[in-house]
Length: 146
Image 1 (cartoon, rainbow, N blue to C red):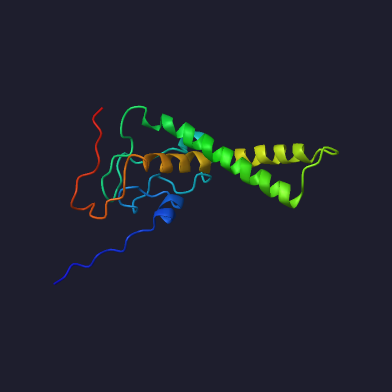
Image 2 (tube, one colour):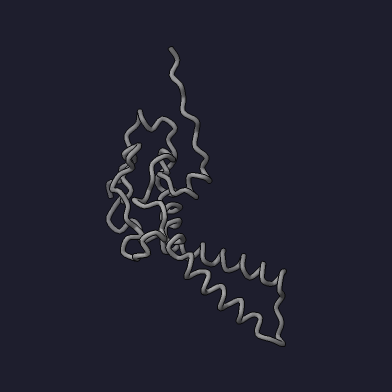
């Protein structure tokens, strides 16, 4: 009898749905919706290990400090994208306050998406250190001993 192979999960979809980088199946956060509880203290509630492949999420003490750089880069990219969209659709003029309207709406938009932005930063950051393993059932999870 031949073993049935599970289909390989899509990389982009596993990032958007915030799944484990090693197996792309297990959830990285206890609650999949960052806005459900609306308590800032529960945005980062994560299991210690992936429930599917047993990959440890917090690889070392202070591991998640690097997500600040990823979050900053994403905020800049989003701001550039909204500015380009504003420039193309509405335009920028020195004769009125359209640039200040964009600035205010961009700040408001970044505040609203901040919980999602912080979570997706964690998902992207851990992918720099933990890669996908198609045969994760046969191999041990990545461990770092610093």
